[in-house]
Length: 160
Image (cartoon, rainbow, N blue to C red; front, side, top):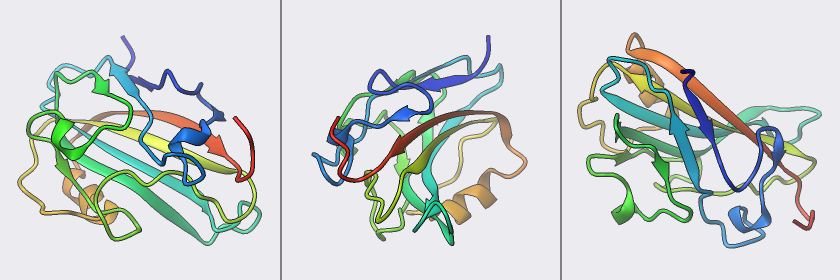
């Protein structure tokens, strides 16, 4: 069974609903996953946008959400998940707004792609505090058993 991540809110390569963006309620979309490989001890989630600030001339990857130590047996996250509602043991990292939690799409120009990357790890990570994406990627190096990706898109002013 392949390792997959999906959302009932949008199809892979489909448009992320306005509710999950800065033009809406800015709440995280519901996510579901399955097929973590044998030996998975925890999961990590990174949501980022490689098209910032302009898809025609990207200069950086903007990080929207960082989670780690999601339990291996977890199967997803509900819509608008609060820190208190995260699965037991889950830790939050810092996004590029310099805070924890989900920050929805808010592209200044053009249609951007948002990558929801889920990593199956062969370890439970030590307490990294509130790591940035870079710190988390360094910590998971050599521990990734599989990666699942869901891509959504968004353009400001679009009504969905």
